Length: 205
Image 1 (cartoon, rainbow, N blue to C red):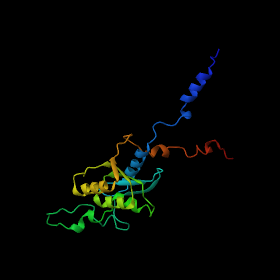
Image 2: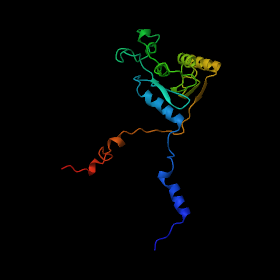
Image 3: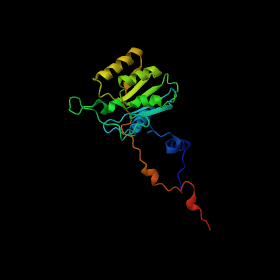
Image 4: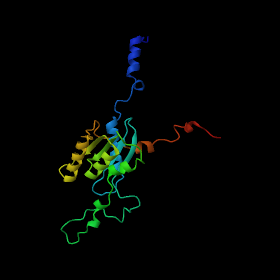
């Protein structure tokens, strides 16, 4: 004899059903945007430092992304990727990557295609230098969230904070709620492309 379920049991079962509530391990907004910056950094060809940046509006829409690299049409194979060593016999300031590289934050601002950036937030994997801070202030970005501030004691980054503080641009280190995000293409590549179309059950004569 089968046991009859009370209405309360049925309601409980519906509540616990995975189809009846949202997924709980989804990415929170700040983690999502910082992950976008990290993914963008993977595009950088700099062999030492890869930086990514992402600009987001008040409605949590990504309006621009960028990473550090040479200006458009400047060959990645012809321009230098190293720093010129002062005091060495062959020191040549024109063979220093800093003369040519556009920083991630600057590229993100330039990639906004002239869109109004007043009140937006900038997510960056590395705290912005003084030159990028000038651009951040000029376009009206109101908040900077960063992962690393490893050059905090260098004059260029101290100058950056001085300017941001002077004009009231907020900045804080982002502490991820989710410590690791895995992008796995293999799961999708192993899928049967015919299954979702129902072609496996289609028999052609």
